[in-house]
Amino acid sequence: MKHYPFILFYLFCNVFIYAFHGSFWVYIACFLAFSAVVVWGSFDIGLGYFVNSITHKRTKINEVALTFDDGPTEFTPQFLDLLKEHQVKATFFCIGKQIEKYPETFQRIISEGHTVGNHTYSHSNNTGFLSASKMVEEIEKCDEVMLETGKIQNDLYRPPFGVTNPSIAKAIKKTHKTSIGWNVRSLDTITDDEKKIFKRVTTDLKKGSIILLHDTSEKTYNVLVDLLLFLKEKKYSTFTVDSITKSKKND
Image (cartoon, rainbow, N blue to C red; front, side, top):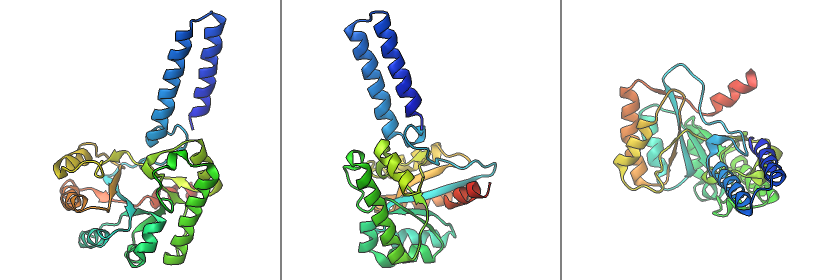
């Protein structure tokens, strides 16, 4: 969490400006720069500005993690069929409401050996504006649904939209979660061009990458078809993100 030192630096800058009789516009410029960094830090999970998130695996071998957010959905069974065909295990960050809607699919994810994680109960569009207590409620309610439906509990959590802030940081700490980010973002929820999605993923790929995808559309399924063939051709194996957290606990 890098925001505390930066806040101190910002305060120091203000004292420095005051001591040397800086103009009003210098204060404004300093404030705008500070605000820009805060916004950037809130939306870029890889910075670790508010929350230290796992964004990759330190490894010397060709292996990557496939992660899918926002399910289960009507498309998830297709993804599971494809992963099973290629004998690949993935990590699914599931929304509580979606688990309630597709309980059998959630159970299938678990029974076929994939890893699941908490993606809050409702995946609210207002996530970045919720209080710490509300975020705790969102996380704990999803945990309850996961336990009731899949008889499973773990500490894996992915912030909706990758947004973090002090309230979310407090909620993660209170619920004893480990935040899981990514270092390869497909942007498959905002890009319709399958070729662009595929290129974005494969261009940035490196050893230990955690890839963010969504099991919510036909286009991402089509991208996954090509991606699995690409990984096989380039001799990449796959890992699930719990292998990282288990390794850290054993260190």
